[in-house]
Image (tube, rainbow, N blue to C red; front, top):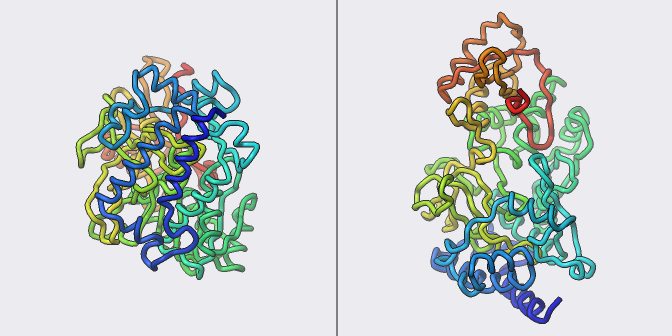
Length: 475
């Protein structure tokens, strides 16, 4: 490590520590850190500006990826020293990181954790799924671990978690950020955790009955599956000890029928985490107690530790206040991966009005309903899988799972879509076929072929559900 690299690292770590208020326990029942969670817009902007002025020299001196990008753009680190300067820096997308890790295996150069730091105070390696290319790898330090625990604790405190709760983690661990971050945040809060990875539905039902957790933590798809499993075992999910469903990995609050199904099935309140491995691995979007009230459904964004923007999907230029755009995150709470303007790529509308909970931090109104990468283009009509979910889950009696199959017809090459759903009245003559087709046509103005199969035919997963199969490229 060069002298300049070490100097900028120390300055950055000192700045992070300066704004880590109430590091060990909540200072208030409603806000973990009133100085931060209750900060005014001007105070939040001042924190962001101070951090930006320090992080850019740190990135330049400690990341070959960022140094090369600064030089290529003809920018010096001092050119990006405040929020007003951010637009000078074109967004970084996952393809840039993928190319970097392919050119510089195994870790790439887009993080600021060199081998010597990893050997001194390394903590854990995380990875993206790699379903669309080479996985992007992120190594984190012991310092990062402490910031993850603190920021996640702040978010879960806002959701109403207390030491009186017990959380049942119904997802496996592995190289994914969600479960580990939740575990560390709960430990910081003094909230008990039951790990449930590697169990089947019957075993997890037994855990719920025996140990009576108050919070279930999983994807929304798995929460639906687990509820149906309990019903099959003669148990009523709504009669259990569960008071909150803590979901992540897939949209939940944003999709009305899914939200209502979950809350009706379990008789529990739905809360949600949002983030991404690259730039918001902890405390990205989170639910507060006011979510679902007069302002509808939304997620808070913790602006003292991150900068959130939205950009136009075509130009990638910042959108005006109140306009829908793709989410962009600048991470200002990491020794190892303080990314600058990473294109997360989910559509939302940001609102900076004061929330009924007392926070002035930005809110993603309507939450995050669809990632640009997931957008389907069928004969020029564009839609998200979540829109199919909205249509299908609004029909009483259908199973919770569905599949979208895209293909090209042999006779004329036209792109077509088939939707596969589950129902006891299955088969080609099912009376539900027209109802499902009509609901989808009303939602996205596309005619789809419908296949209705027997219950429990489609796969279930405790991780992110894969519901789209695109066979068009194979024809």
